[in-house]
Image (cartoon, rainbow, N blue to C red; front, side, top):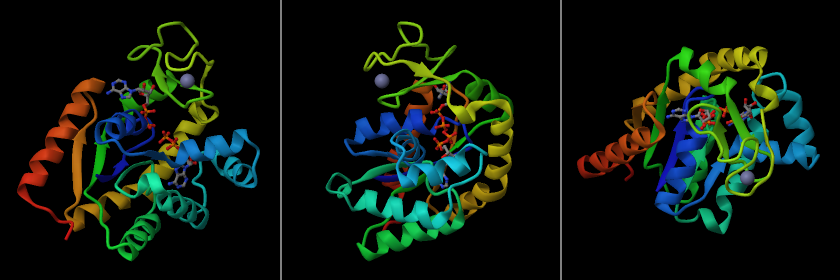
Length: 223
Ligand code: ADP
Ligand code: ADP
Ligand code: ZN
């Protein structure tokens, strides 16, 4: 299964991508998570990414497209991947198409998790993430079993630097201007599945699986 998960910051992309990766037994590729790891490791990529991410801006397309190209060249991506938070610009979408075309592959679907802005603020304000494994929690809807500690690996949970109000506002402006056109890109190709992101995590997951199944019964736009 080759999927891209689209949606505003806080829409639930990371949460659902992680579940989909387990369900379809393929890697969860999150560009945001790759950048955060590089920032933590203080690599050259990390320093460049941090400059943009801390302001709520996108990391430039050339860097991001190359990063994704390398990642989906890796052996674990050969039979599928769940791309979370990529593409975020039409250029990135074209970049992905080029990469796949060279391999005679195509996307199964682009999933848009649709959420109101009010709910976006509620989700991002209370999001906590694991500093080591990247697991995602929410103080109300998905609290860890032990406050402040990751259920999966026991490491400390933190609020992301870019989950503060000013940066959230900047990210939403960027989303409207740069990323929304990507939705039209996939809609025009007939690969877009719009999913209501408002329900609880299990409900949203079931809706995604149902619409993927219905879709594959109806058509296969892939070839
Ligand atoms: P969110 O979960 O809030 O949608 P992500 O974890 O996906 O955020 O990404 C965090 C930040 O990393 C983004 O705000 C952006 O600065 C950068 N980033 C992630 N993916 C991309 C991308 N595909 N293109 C450019 N920048 C990206
Ligand atoms: P994104 O990757 O799109 O920025 P996340 O998956 O990180 O979004 O989710 C944002 C926050 O909302 C996290 O704290 C997560 O635990 C929580 N969350 C995700 N999906 C839901 C849902 N369906 N209902 C309630 N909270 C959710
Ligand atoms: Zn962890």
